Amino acid sequence: MIPVIMSGGSGTRLWPLSRKNKPKQFLNLFGDSSLFQNTLSRLDGVAELEKPIVVCNEDHRFMVAEQLHEINIENAKIILEPCARNTAPAIAVAALQAQLQGDDPIILVLAADHIIHDQQAFHAAISQAKAAAEQGSLVTFGIIPTSAHTGFGYIEAQEKNITSKVKGFVEKPDAETAKRYVDSGNYYWNSGMFMFKASTIIEELERLAPEILVSCQQALTQSKTDLDFIRLDKKEFETCPSDSLDYAVMEKTDKAVVIPLDAGWSDVGSWPSLWENHNKDQDNNVSIGDVTLENVTNSYIHSEHRLVSVLGVDNIIVVETPDVVMVASKDQAENIKLVVEKLNKQNRDEASLHRKGYRPWGYYDSIDSGERFQVKRISVNPGASLSLQMHHHRAEHWVVVKGVAEVTCGDKVMLLSENESTFIPLGVKHRLHNPGRVPVEIIEVQSGAYLGEDDIVRFDDVYNRS
Image (cartoon, rainbow, N blue to C red; front, side):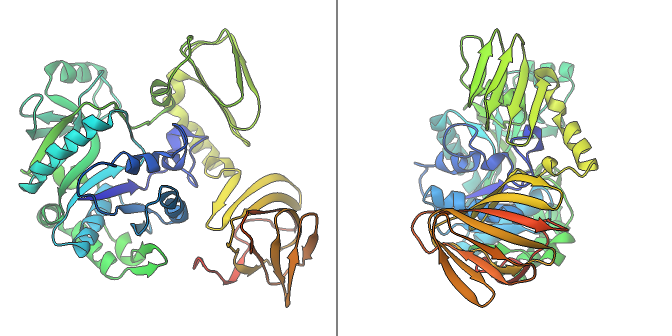
């Protein structure tokens, strides 16, 4: 069985913690591991499990590789989507790749950003699903509803409380319809998790959505391997229709069955759902970070960077990050996307970028900026290097504050220790390398007419970035 992890989401409903450059699946929202890492770790103990296939956005490839490495998963196949095309093409590509790895493996399709509290119940459902998949069924996992939720699609089963043929898929209902579904006992929340043989889903795609399958076959056939990554052919993948697996296949096939799942599942799709899934204090609050509360109830307070004090309120969300403070009524938190849309229209970086930017060599933190200058704290992992590069519009001053840095500046290569500095003139080729065993940290002061991240010309890069 090959786990296929779908990790293409942008997670804007948990803004400002989750943003386009580091969405919620890569955040440690519950403990010391990310949702993506937990998705894989909860499969520990499942029999005959092979290395995973991860389908992700090209921009997130190094985060995926690093987070896999952190939980000791090596040799995973990481497929890079050059553009978003919904779940049907992503699953099609993964199934085609899975066939290349084995005769006809079963694939278990999971979202990277869900939580499941009862691992034992989840494993039991996987065993049931595997038996059905081996018989040629397309299995979906239906969540036994705990409320008449209007934020999920529903699956109608022919029979109650057992593995059953699917009678139909329905869109997110209104409150009255949702209550009727839940009262009936044969409707489940649609989890978006699946299991099937690679050959079965490919055959059904060929029959029901041939345009998707052909585009994905061409994109994978013409793909290129780059380090740990499989880069799908951009031109071919862009021609692929964008469709969900439910619309493209599951609603039309006669092979769909649903496995009931009661395992404490959540898609963590909003601030209220994040609050619901955390442990709470005696006043029904969730407090994370440096937080003080007085006469506060039923609230979620999250501090990343500084002390947050909240007094005399009920049912609110407060989220503080180094560059954004967001305050919302819990009842209105579902509308956070309206704030993100407004910020995008204003071309505000905060809509999609965190102050801390992650790179394959480490990270940078933009700690100050003003007219014609910007200050960054840069951390380079042991053995890692930035690209050999130059800038057309800015010069840089580097001060080493931790470790030993190897600096290339023009024709010179020098070692700089703590409290030593150098100047990188505008237009001069340069590189920063960490030759040691501990992270190197420098303070970089940029000055110039234009300080955008796109003012970079790379001459040599071990990570094959353009």
